[in-house]
Image (cartoon, rainbow, N blue to C red; front, side, top):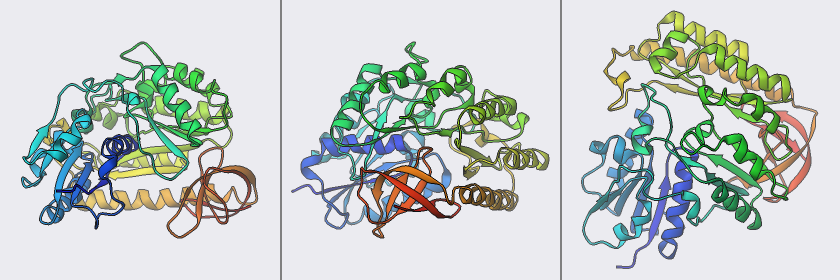
Length: 417
């Protein structure tokens, strides 16, 4: 049998980085479209119930006509939803064995518990996409015990990769022509908790590379970032650094944060936000909100709504709570669906209003932008110095260009050279 493999990826940037490693390991067998493939690898996510259902349906729809191999987080989060007819299952710590599964005539399952088994993922080669962005994974796992989160079951406790290996991967990506570095992990602020290194030390080493590039820091939790926030805010002044801060709050109510086991207060979150806003012009603030956590009563939700009105983030990743297997919050009494939907609707309207107002304030301003990718409709996406996306025409991926902002939507700016 001639293997023709297509890889479909769900979930976060960390998962996309794993898919790039898998692509390199299977390079000789890859095809451009799912129609050409006789084997499909689904690199899965299990963070939300809705995503899990979508993936489970996708697996079942493919397995009748193609060999299906399931990788990613779902095998350790909820293996029961994976169709038993799949040809193989592989965990996040076993992706080096993907070729063995592909070549096997029998169904194979590799799911290791030790997330240090592979060693640093920076030591693996990758096949990246056609954008100007390079994903660089800095650690595996997290240091949290959030009562709603199941991703920690798949990724384990924090395992930080050595600074030298990360800097080497960044350097190699820049030599290959990539101009945007996406540092990613489950929690970038937890980097080094197990090794004695720190995120600021890592960033300083990366910024000593003598090349023109931009770096986006992935999600950083408030309980860890607060330990070095003053040092980090100074590092954000470096010209290589996107003025982009992804700081998830999840709830604007302290009692709910305790029930979530988040390890910080609303005050902690606000102090970090205010510090960055006082020191970094145009800081692009992204945050995460979970609506409908089991102990979120009406008053708690209103506290969250008021917090968003107060801090006015550029972007909110808004999620309706869904109980995940094995988590303490799945055993709590759940809030009726209609209440969760109504709260989500209200926050979504507020989110769009605030984002649009902020984006319109950029109209008439002039920036340098890095062109990061070509879109399906023939336009291009660029990023200005705080990572705001700008839709552009008549340019090339990888270029730094000067642009004027002519218009804005709630999700992106519209620019012209």
